[in-house]
Length: 125
Image (cartoon, rainbow, N blue to C red; front, side, top):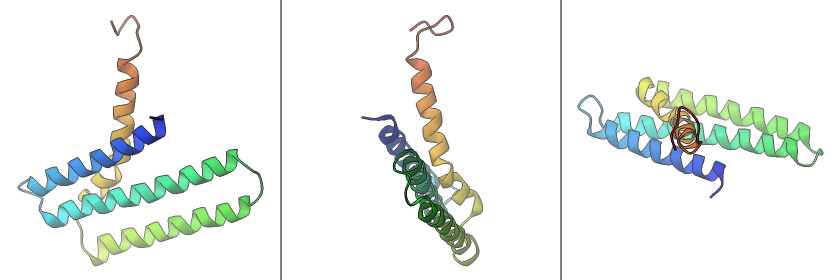
């Protein structure tokens, strides 16, 4: 499994685990769990957009202006989606932020995996 696929899988697992934990927590509930899942969805769409731009910049040089317009349009739609979640649905902001941080949790897990597999003086492996 490639690094990016593992990272995406770990982010999905982290988001689902945080949503389940918030659902069962006494201060949480279904709206908080929905906020975590909504924040995770925002992070996933943003990640896919960044991934497409990076792979597009590395690939063929044609259509870069179109890719840039698509990139900024996607982020404008993300801002509208975040507004709807926070202002109209009144999902807890902390829950949306927790869900949006699921990719950060996945990166920390990947770093811990990488550090754990590298032998060295501080790591007896």
